[in-house]
Length: 493
Length: 121
Image 1 (spheres, rainbow over the protein chains, first blue to last red):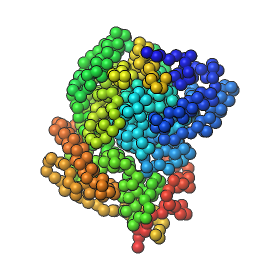
Image 2: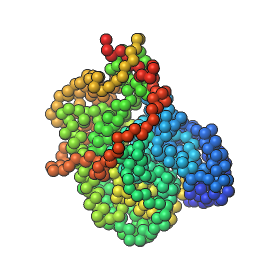
Image 3: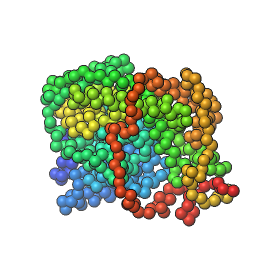
Image 4: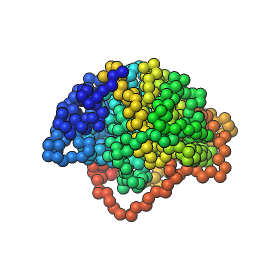
């Protein structure tokens, strides 16, 4: 076991440790940025974690951060390098969303998440690869090619935030943003041995995120420790006048409660999450993690989510329905790819979209169009929204008995690239444990909790709405008694 | 091709509205249905991708069809993931006019308008 510590090489340090190092003058932001850019450069070809790199801008910002530090100015993330999933709009830097249709799109403004992290002092090194429009669980639907898993490069890093997860796991960057519509932060975090936090629906503004499914999408982070996730959430969370669904709720200091003990914490273990479908070894690994939390003073309580088995089919009605509506904006007229030599307006729409979207995105648009079409709306869309209510109710009832719900993040460790691309349903079932939190709008976190055949396993914690602080402190306490989050893939130490 | 500047509104462009036939279950889709859906979605499918779309879309529709068995009498459909209502805001102008900057991303513009093929003869 190789555990890193603050005296380690810069790339092995967490964001929190790097912040201390910068504050103590051990190294400059320029030195840090240069060393990480070199690492990215050395590994980009084999990992393909990035779609766009912004080295020059990053170095200029690093110099500015160093100057600010000398005069005592600057925010809590002053001079710390991060990367953004290429779904967040960044003014002046292209935002592709992993799609051909947006391959040349340059946003005129920053997403609120990008703006807030920037004003807290963070430096963007680049934009990470992802499944096209965040529709995928393996990063293989990206127009820019699949990302490889740093733990075994024949394997998928998961998705859709696969580039963010791979970059953090490979120690190219200490932290990355991601988005989670059905598990797109937590599942790749689990498959790459990183921490993935999806906040409550509305906790973080969605303004400037390319919309996929507006009632499910939420921005979050992929880091190497729960402590780092808390640090970033502090900067990202909060109401935004530009997103009417952002929640006007008080924001605690998430770093202040990390040291809260798990003594007396009631952890719900969902019976249905350990049924068939879960790999035996992964199940054992997760149970060992739960036992460690129990030893630390938490109590384990069995809970039922009777309708959770319907979460994947519910999601595959609701998400495609919203996707078909959201993606109608890509019309070849105002932005994005436009087909050549079109006959008329109808031809322009159909061919620009036909050429610009990849196969999975087309399937989702068409599924959504079908379930919303005349004669089918009640049978599919309305029905799914009712089942969604049942799933949400199940969670609320469970939270009357417990403080958090824990279980596996994904049914298996990382799968081979190409293994599941032929069958959409097999791919969709990867998100069987994560989708429930999106349907019910709840916060969830995946924390590395062991290795099976040298591949990482994730422990998922889900909490009541706006209970990110208890998820983060529980995860942080787990990371005080274990060091799975300190383990780096062999080729990237 | 000669292009005419015009402002597109949804009301002006009615398009090709097609009503789908409601089939008996099982719901696997026919080629004709998939073609209709593609038209509704404004997606041109190439011949070589069409069969794959029909088979995979059928699998997806069959998969989500298991929802039909769930008992949902008297359940209110979810309209917000946390069952909250949305805030209203004052109807004030808060954004500046950035038309020129926004149009930098457009494939074809003229005098501040988006250009599309002629739609009015």
